[in-house]
Image (tube, rainbow, N blue to C red):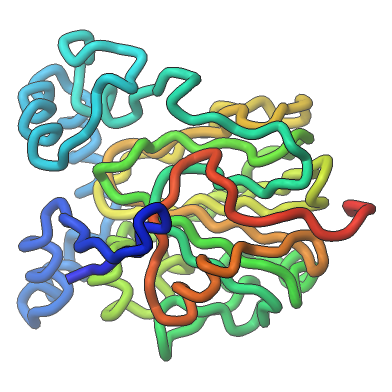
Length: 300
């Protein structure tokens, strides 16, 4: 059972997990874990899954998925019958008014829909996966010098469940360099899996890029793939000037994770998010939602 904090109601909700039975079997039983290591975590399984979800045969899965998870299709740019595959539905674009990015430069906004955890004054050599389980930023990106720049800063971890809107955005104006790809496995990033597999984010396929933002300095974006995620697709053009809310990319089918790092003294995260993280809970958020405030005057 996964409890997520709803900051609008001030109450906790039980997350309805897509494929919960399969996840429990794979990560919480001996035979399941054996199959996970031998087959499920490997690229072939996710690639085959991706081929199916890109095919026209997968469209029959859309209506059942929408009904099971109560997805509001009125927010989409396309009508249900216009999607030519399940993946086309999965990476659906929303109407501009569905996710509004405030232009106030003092506000730190969320890059995507999902479940958010946040930490301040971070130790980059000891980042938290779950209580009692840690990994390092150097291990995550393979660059000790770059990792050290974020010592004492802020770490945002946004988990996108399969039911979420799967496009992610720039939280400020600025320019982003080319994304660097790191090969890896395809473990689930659901909390069920995080309890079992150490350093999941460092073991999975991932990409990272540096975003020189106008108001929050040099930010580090990291996208992590997971089981059944055929691709992490970057849609921005490296070096071009972006405006707040511009699309950075999207994940194809499956649960996924984004991490966003800010340097020390650049932002103050909202207290309710920090408090829920301390208690071990994620906070439900949407792209463009305010999650903090700017701190400091001279980004670098």
